[in-house]
View (cartoon, rainbow, N blue to C red):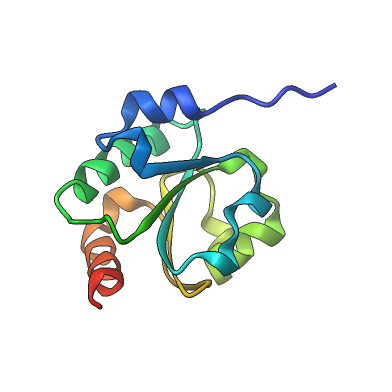
Length: 134
């Protein structure tokens, strides 16, 4: 019998945003990708120091924007299969691995992705501004 680790307490501990702004998901099918009008998915690896630090930095980064129109999803990396990771991160899955990966969604389609948030903050800002743009 397998037991699933609940990432919610860690998400709450390290988030710079209030928990009512985040939807924590532990099953990829529950993301409902096709139903997301505008949103950002952060793939959270509770077992990875770089992911936890990137999450903290990313939520601090988001707190400087008016993001009420965006759905903010924290997805447990341990629920991803190679197939679901490929849906979010196209050809970059070979470098995917728990360091703070992000996907920007518009009308159910991934319009941007970013591995290693710490190294790509300008890219994250551009994708976020594009989602907030209209």
